[in-house]
Amino acid sequence: MPSFGAQMRAARQARGLSLAGLAELLPADKGHLSRIENGHRRPGEDLARRVDEVLGTRGELITCAALDVSAALDARPWETAELLHRMRAGAEATRIAARQLGDEAGHTGITGWSWEMAAWFALTQSRHGAVLAASRAGQLAAGRQGVTVQLIAQEAKALARLGDAPAVREALDRGRQLLDALPAPDRPDNHFEVDPDKWLFYAMDAYRLASDDAPAEHYATEVIRTGTSPNGVERSPMRVAEARLTLAATAVRSGDLERAVDSGLAAFTAARRSLPSLLLVAGEVDAELHRRYPREHATQDFREALNALR
View: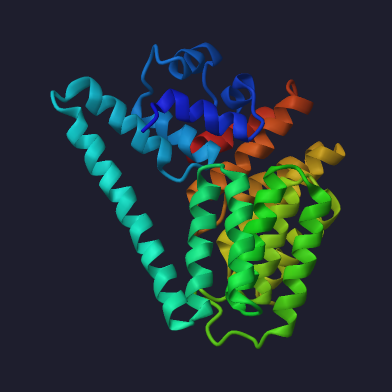
């Protein structure tokens, strides 16, 4: 398994971030990060978690940091490495078994979800080419059903991270057309179901990542509308919070500092929130604010509020 520094460098470069850009997002000292990447320092637990959240590696970097510590302190570090390897191998074996079961039983839904798992694993590791390969293979295997919509969403997310805005639009249009042609799900709260409200959220996320601001703002507004009851109670507070941060991102890119900070701060008041996702999107806004308005008091206010969440 690669060291924390090597894995951090790979994840950072996959997102097109410079070392200075990552330092701003965390925030952290650029020189300290450089020493970590080069293997001359090990990150503390708090820094490892912040880097993992900002780069969206879903625990991969935390595991690398733990293994680095074990290798330094444990007389038999290979046992720790072997345990981690077996854990990953077990998850992959389960996914492969599910695909074989789906293929043998002719159950295209199971086969499709096994490909979706592969796409998701690759997305968390910033292997965007692998995401595209798995999501497209899954679409071919599954045909026209709900899992195919989810696979198209993963394809769009990978394309967004690659900066291909026209391809993102094409994928999302294709996914929405398929969703509209399918029966409404019986249980939209089920992870294995995609309903129109969930699709709005996926589209918003992909368009924001692709810096395609007009549709990103449109879908963010729709996520807030559908996630809020007529009496103002937020039915989907986590989605609404990320929608407010999306509006903050589009506002700062359009030059509206006041609206950007107001929308961003409003996202931090959610009663329920997925903190890793919130920090990731808020970090995008924070970096853009400091790039465009580094000396404004509003920019500092936003960073202070963001740091208070960590």
